[in-house]
Length: 164
Image 1 (cartoon, rainbow, N blue to C red):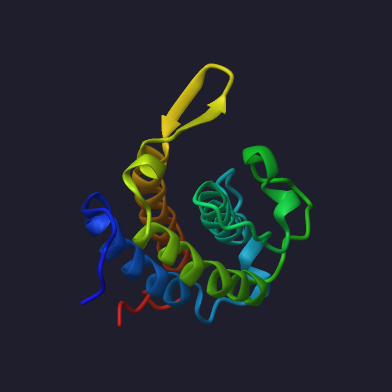
Image 2 (tube, rainbow, N blue to C red):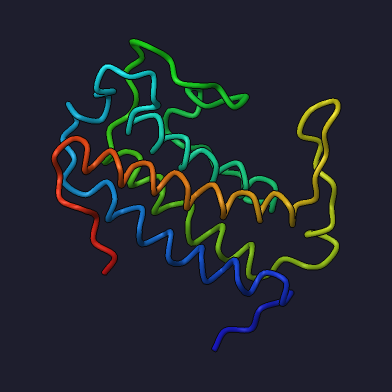
């Protein structure tokens, strides 16, 4: 069993590992054409959801000292919302970025010290949160976005995502 530097991250790592695997499953087999199909709604499409999820891992990694940049980072800089008529990176590009950052971020979380987790991060001029709180929110948001993509799979006629 691996040694976790701070037991506060125990539960997060379990969810992190699950979501690392779920990411590949949820985007598996989706055609590039369908990644921007919004079914005549204002909902965020799969390309934006996937890229936003990858951007979140890269952003969180930066807060834990891992300085890497994803492909298409400009689409999500400053928490940018969906951009109509933009050509987002492909799911394969996002998958490669995910595979690069996930083990690096996992290692950073595994080795996070109490002072690192308690460090305040300025999210905006009027809002701060600790790195621990950002990790908590990020793990929650990952599950939420994977669920949204799983719903899009079904709405677009794809089989349900596989959990194994």
